Each structure stands twice: as structure tokens, then as C-alpha cells.
Amino acid sequence: MKAIGFKTSLPITEKESFIAFETVKPIPGPHDLLVKISAVSVNPVDFKIRQNSAKDTVLETPKIIGWDAFGIVEAVGEKTSLFEIGDEVYYAGDITKQGSNAEYQIIDERIVGKKPKSVSIEEAAVMPLTSLTAWEILFDRIRINPEKDKGKTILIIGGAGGVGSIAIQLAKKIAGLTVIATASRPETIAWCKEMGADIVVDHKNLIESVRATGHEFVDFIVDFVDTNLYWDTMVELIKPQGHIASITGSSDPVALNKLKSKSVSFSWELMYTRSMYQTDDMQEQHTILNKIADLLDDGTLKSTLKETFHGLTAENFKKAHEQLESGKTIGKIAIKF
Image (tube, rainbow, N blue to C red; front, side, top):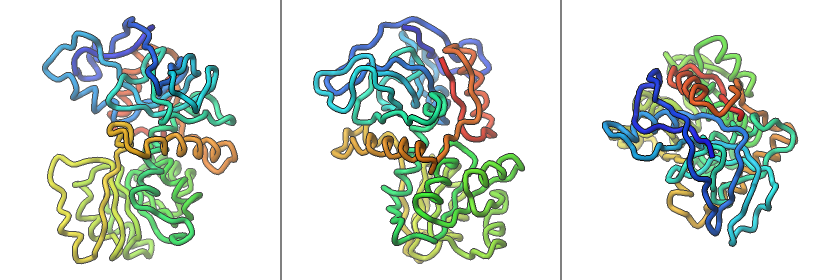
């Protein structure tokens, strides 16, 4: 099969930052599906792993990354029960295994969902990673209850990005929250409003921007940009007994002691936790993806696709990564084979 990968971590402008190569089609294990892939998308995790996983070394076999895909099931493992050959599926994958930037991939069926019927394959391909991340941070980490918490406020830092775009929709349409999202350019402000944000504020002067809207504090904050950069701001804006959650990690210790006087909770979210550790509730990702598919099909949610490149080529992945690394991407980019 054809695949796109890299043998060493290079700047995206370098010729061999991505290379096309031929490799053996994988064979599914007991719980796996073999999927023939038709479309993928790119996420910030892709370029972070490309930049760091083969530093100062040259791999014998190129590394295949990519954690979003749409495809058709071509073969199934002996212990599978959720899907059959010919099923159309979408998924975000497992960071410990081979990625989706290839013609074929094996994937544990417990983290795979049925493709939404009402959207194109590229519109489906951009949704899994961001939808799982947004769903888990809102409903599994913060544990927002749509009945109990309806009408409460949430601040979404990074509203126009991939995760922010779907988090706005879930927070508004499913949780019934008042959504305040950050954006600063006219096009990102417009996008956040299109996704359903009630209020859009400038991340450059966040405390003043939020308070100018009449909200001294907010009930929940989710950070999709930089935990430490916004830490003191989040500490100031969070309501006593509120909840902050982040996906961005931190190279420096996070000053959790600053939350003590307000009795504020803090959570990390990593979409890969369930698959990395084969958690008891690993199949919850299958359930969430099926819920997202139903919400797309009934019109509650809309795909966050913004741009599509055509062709399984190194050049297309270079273009997509270059755009992502600029930090100015709105919504999601798909690559359709």
C-alpha cells in the first residue's frame, strides 16, 4: 500500500519533511478492523509528533502519523462484533499505533464510529478527534449536566480552532450553556458566531474583554491554546467552585495552589487515554462517535470542515501542516484520496 510518512523530524519547508513510500498492508488483530481509507484530516498533534518523534535520528522505516479518518471496512478480526465488511466508518485512532496517512489502516473497533449519513466523506473525516476531545472535556472531565447546568457560562479559549469549533456547538446545542469564545480576527470572530457562540471576546485582553460583557466570573473554562499562558487569567475569571479543563499540556508546573481559595477543580483531557491504557470504558469512544454521527444527521451539529486538498501526496500533507503550524487555521482541513 502507499503511505505518507517521515524518517527524521524536519521543518515542514524541507523536501523530506514528508515522503511517499510503499509498505505492507497490515493484517487486523482479534478486535481490529482493516479500513481502506478515503479521507483524513490534520490536527495540531500531527505536527507536534512530526517535529519531535524523530529528532536527531533517522528511522529505518518511515513513521506514519495521522489521527482522523473516514474509510470502508475491508476485513475484520475474529473477535469483532460492532462492524461488518463494507461498513462506512470514521475514527480518530490510537497514538501508540500506525496512523491514518495511508491507503489502509488497522483500528480497534471499540474506538470506531459509524459514518454520519448526511455529510460528505471529507466532512466526516475532520470530525472524530475534535469531537471526541470536546465531548470528553465537557461531559467526562468537567461532567457538565445539561439539566442541572443549563444556562451556566463557559469560556472557550481558542474558539475558532478544530476543537473549539465543535466545543462551541456541543456547549450551546447539547449542554445549553451561555458560550463565550475567544477570537480576535474578523474571520475568526465570524466563524465562532457561526458555530453558535453567544459572545466572542478578544484573547489579547481576556479579563477586560469578558468583564466588559457583564460577566465578572464564568462557571467553566476550557483551554485549547496554552495552559500556562492563560493560567492567571483563568484563575481570575473562574467562578468560585467552578471547573477549568485543558488539552494543551504544560512543560512547566501548573500552579494549582492558586485555585485553592476558590475551591476550583482542574482536569486534563487527552483523547488518547482510553486507547493508550485500554481502559474498561474504551468502547465509550465508539458510543460518542455514534452520537456525534446522529447529531450531524439530525442537523444539531455541523461539520467543521473549512478546506479540502485532493490526493494522497507528500505535498498535500506539507501544505496542510504548514497551514496548521501558522496558528491561523480556522476549523479543519481534510485531505481526500
